[in-house]
Image (cartoon, rainbow, N blue to C red; front, side, top):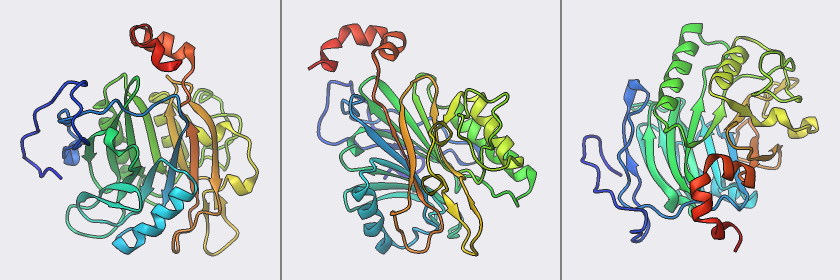
Length: 321
């Protein structure tokens, strides 16, 4: 892992693929994350012709390394390629590997084991990682190469409804700052525990909330919906009708309360969603959250033609072999 202040390695062209890449780490602190320098080596990237399964899970704690094999086993069993993790409670930032997955995390800089986020990536896709940007204990970003460009994955852990309004607004302001530094043509995925339901009323939010929203709208809901609308992000779970058992992502330990507060948000620029559901069978120690998984990224000709016209005509044979 590159330490803060270390010079970035010399960049290479896409054709110079020499062994697995070493992703560049950058540290943005309170500014919301500085743009990382290009990685030294870049692989051809994720093949968007194949289904990609992206998840979001609040694990309550990932502070001990002995928990990692169980987590990797559950992700592998459910064929999850990429997962955004909340409440990891790992201080500082770094990376570690276990059970076929590489985990990048971002936590508190003072060493306290509270809050924290992480992104876990299957080792089959890990060579496509080119940038890792830990921001703070609420936000981090990983940028990956795919066959048509780049994808920015942003893991979040939003303040709960009980927190002060100023804290919530500061969180979304910093999240906006991080997204501002994502190149505009990146495929954008934001995932994590937003501590917010979407509500069932779509008026004014038809592009970001589907016909199957849930819960009663509150302050956190409004902040989430306004953010999704301003960034043209689609809240995946609201677009698919599911039984309640495959919808609720959080169950109160006291019983009687269940909500859909963990979400996967995907850029509307690409029509890439195929499905989104919760897996009750996924188990991880004492977490009261459920793993939500979106199946994504089967690219259609129309999106390729409109968004990557030059690439399509130069490389059309890649998509039909």
